[in-house]
Length: 469
Image (cartoon, rainbow, N blue to C red; front, side, top):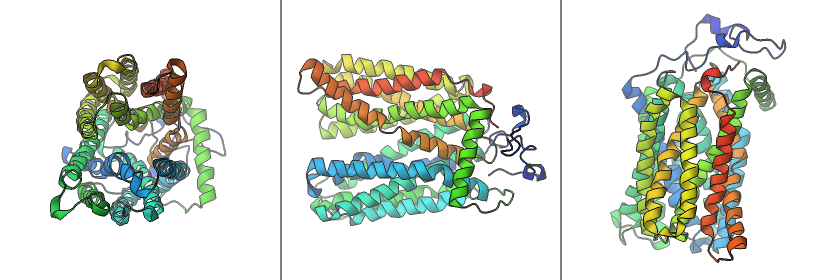
């Protein structure tokens, strides 16, 4: 993935990598990192790179969170319990395939030197899948089609995200990685909410939207999906004009079985040479699941506990994403000054405190949720972006795809924790208080996951003390 001279094509000892047969390594300080080999990029190229996140984000914001997933679980497709259970099943299956495929496909991108090419065709497939959701009519007969397209798209989106994360080495250096990571992540938040507002006000909210679109047969939602496909294809173009695959030494083809053998070898070497990097992958899996829970259940709490209407939830969601985007960009500057671990810890402690305040002040009305809810969004994005920059600082040259694939896999392995903790919290609240609506107790489950991630992260050394071989 990075430009290499003849010396980088030499054996593993000369690259500072562990030789799996000999069981030896050079001084870890001599191991070249992907970022250390990068010359950085111009502001124009960094912005083009960030525009991929802006362009691809509607899959997460519009399709899987606010619009299509809600449409698919509506009465038009069957009972709420049945459609919700089917959606949960499809989501779980998609998560399984991401966990299994992400590190191996990332590894293959590294070996072939075709990270950008793979990202390009995966993005086009994602755009096509988004547009194809147009064919999911508001009828129970189309439920399975919608679930299949949504599940496949979620897998493609995650795998594309692995390759996108791997390209950060083309646009960042060790000195500005925090800034660049925060800039890209912030762009994603802003792009997602702009896309949501465009679809909402042009097609979904009006009785008769643009081009005469109405809600009959779900046409307002279906046309929005078509527009999402166009959005993804259009706004990711600048990234593909600026990002280029870099030549790597030609490597022999590796089959599926051997790919997993090499992957397990990488995990073993990480455990031997940089155990704290393994601890980071585990700690980040915990707190990233907690961060996902903040957004996943924030709208649910807004409506069920604080009495916000559907329109008010959309407005709050827009404000929350804008705040998160701006905060993430600004915290990226702090990342480069004090280090990503400190940014992560500051964010997690703040999230735990704010979550507890929401629990104790749950009867304070909508104004309480506006203040504390927006406060939560200030710290979610920075923790996510700093987590990416932390890992990017450690990755050995030529291993970005594989390691970011492991990053995706560890996150998926524990992705059930926040939903489970949220549900258990509600159940426990009902047992303790005897109240009918104890939804606000669910926030304690999310806080528990965030606190566990923070405690695990405390064990992880600063990135400057890691030695990845």
